[in-house]
Length: 108
Image 1: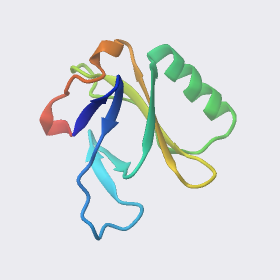
Image 2: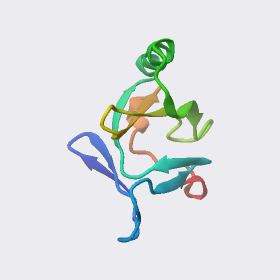
Image 3: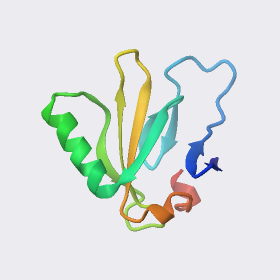
């Protein structure tokens, strides 16, 4: 479920109370780590960041890719872990106005 949190995207996943750390939720063919925190960038800035991280040898939890390609809400996405093990998602939008638009519900 997505919320507009003062202009930021807050995504909440229903997780069973007994779910261990490392739980994942299926999103457009990826096993998305739950919980995670994210940042939204322009698609250009997202691509530049992905290239810098790759060149620095950062391991991706989920490799950079285009999610919901050709649909409303199309976005670049990748996931990394910080040194404390927190999972971070970085999203990139060509059209930032689509941040709260929904891709096909069958793909989430």
